[in-house]
Amino acid sequence: MAGQPEKKPQSVYDFTLKDAIGNDVDLSIYKGKVLLIVNVASKCGMTNSNYTELNQLYEKYKDQGLEILAFPCNQFGEEEPGTNDQILDFVCTRFKSDFPIFDKIEVNGENASPLYKFLKSGKWGIFGDDIQWNFAKFLVDKNGQVVDRYYPTTSPLTIEDAKGNDVDLNTFKGKVLLIVNVASKCGLTDSNYKDLNHLHEKYKDQGLEILALPCNQFGAQEPGSNDEILEFACTRFKSEFPIFDKIEVNGENTSPFYKFLKSAKWGLLGDNIQWNFAKFLVDKNGQVSDRYYPTTSPLSIERDIKVLLGIE
Image (cartoon, rainbow, N blue to C red; front, side, top):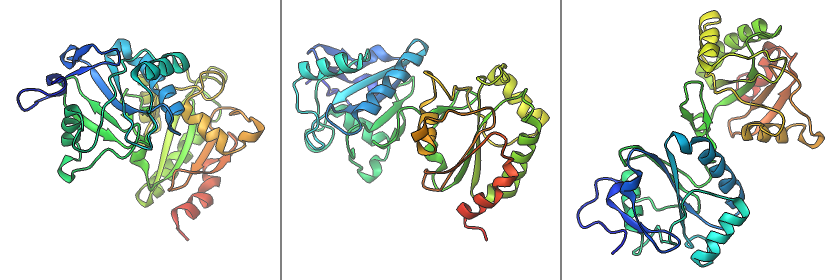
C-alpha cells in the first residue's frame, strides 16, 4: 500500500505517498532537504494566513534546501471537503503556491496515514498526542528526522535571528517584551543601546526580554551585514539581548511581524514607524500594550514595564 513501508520506518524517506494528481512520490527524493510538513485545509479561518506565509518561506528558502509538503485533510470541521482537483485549483489559483500538494489523507484515528503515525511518534508520541487541527506543522531535518512540531496556531513565519536561526516567538510566552527597530549609525544609537542594556540587566531575571530588529530604512543608518551588526552591538555595548535578522518595518516588504505590531497600536491611522528605535511593549500574553516614539528613552518606559511584570 502506498505510504506504508514494509519494515519499521527509520525516517520520512521510507515512505511513498500519492500526490494530488495520483502519482506515487518516494519521499527519499527529498534526502538532504529540510522539510516543513503541514496538514492543510481550504475553508479554515487560518487558511489565508498560512498559505500566504508558507509561500513566503518557500520562495525565500527553496533554493537553499527547504521543501514544503502540504497534505489536505478533512478531519477538522470538514474544512477540506473538495476533491484533489478542486484543492489543487484552489491552492494554485488563489495562492499561486508552487510547493507540492499531496493526496488527501487522515492524520488521526485508525485510518491515519503511516507517515503521520511516524511524525507523531517522533514528537509528543509518548503522550499519544493527536493532531489538534488544520495547519499543524512538523519540521524535518536533512536526515529525515523530526526535529520539532508546532501547534496549528503557530505562524509559519518565524523570525530569523542574526545568525540565521529560526526563532519561534512562542519561546517568549509568559515574558514581557520590549521590541525595538535598531540602527548602528543613528544619533539615538548610544543612548538607546545603553538604556536597553540597563533595562535588560535589571529585569531579565524577572521576565523582561528585549528583541532588537535591525532596519536600514531610516537614513541608511544600519548598512552593515548581520555579522557586522552583531559585532557592533556585542563589542561596543556588550548587549546580551537577542539581535534578529535585518528587516523592513514600512512599505511593501514590511515584516509580517511589524504589520501585526503596527495594526495593534495606531494601526487605524495607518501610522508607519517614524525612525530608528521606535518601541513596542508586549505583555505576557503576546498582546501589544503600548507603542512609543523613537525619541522616547527606554528608561522612561521602566514604569510601564514594571506594571506588566507585576513589580510594585
